[in-house]
Length: 215
Image 1 (cartoon, rainbow, N blue to C red):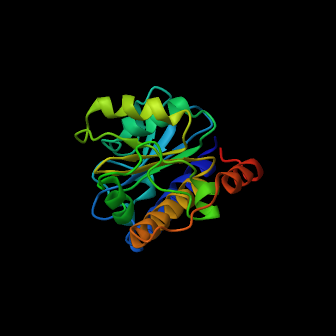
Image 2 (image 1 turned 90 degrees about the vertical axis):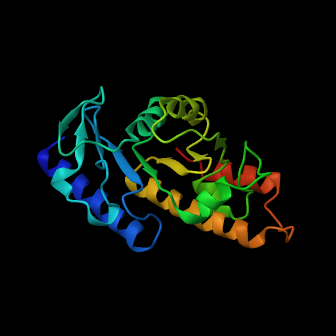
């Protein structure tokens, strides 16, 4: 990868981070973004960094073993990203947020741990699909990476209980858009609770998945 491409990717991470922050999808220094590089390494947002104020040159660059090459120290949740990438060689980017409505769903009793949000809309099916719940772990607990790894091979997105979503995509844009779709659908799900909403049928879901395969 050329230095030009590296700089462009850093700028795009900062641009998407600011967009997510400005619209309230993450707050404070929460949330992190990573992108897989052609050389087998990664760009990753730094620890304690606000996604709304990322400085592109300070974004962490890691080698294929996860060692820091340049930039600031990476997010403390880098192991979540590595766990997802390890199971999803087709994924090029990952977004992890503490977005309000998705976190709210992750705290609800009685949700299906195999599929936290029903298929309310076509775009949710197309961009997210089935969303399993990962049991609660204390932040920084390495066992959380193992729990994510157990689900990541079959799912491009997982929901961490009492924590938030981790979403992989075939590009940075795809990962961001899927995360946004998940947050909007979580909001719909909360608005419709107790209303017995009409969901897409199994046949409609299967038709969408056949026509619009995710990564």
